[in-house]
Image (cartoon, rainbow, N blue to C red):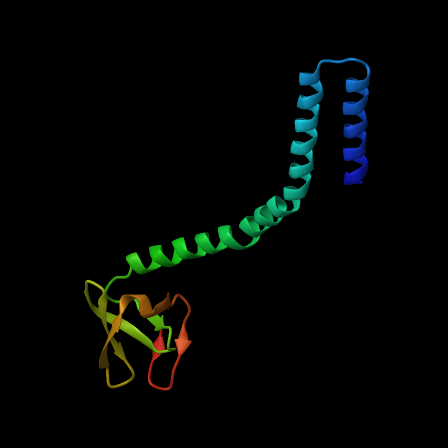
Length: 132
C-alpha cells in the first residue's frame, strides 16, 4: 500500500514536470514525497513507543510515586512488612534507618527505610502476636 502511495506521488511529480510546471514545484513535490515516505517508515516505531509509554512507563512511575509517598509517611507505631518478609512495629526513626520490634520477645532490629515493602492495614495473625 505504501508503494502505491509513493507511485501516485511520483506520477503527480512527473505530470507536473511534463505539463511545463515550474521546476521548483516539481522539486517541492519530490521533497514532499520523501517526507511522506519517511513518515510512513517511522510510524510503526512511534506507535510502539506510545504503546510502551501507556502500558509500561506511566504505570511504573505511578507505582514508584505511591511507594515514595508511603516511605515518606512512615511513623512510629506503624506495623510494617519488610522486603524480606519480616513483620514488625516501628519504634524509632532516624533519617534512613528504622528500628523495629519483632516477635513475642520484642526483639529490636535496625533496617533501612527502603527495605519496607508496605505498611500493614489488615490484621495478620502470628504464633507470637496479632498484627493490627
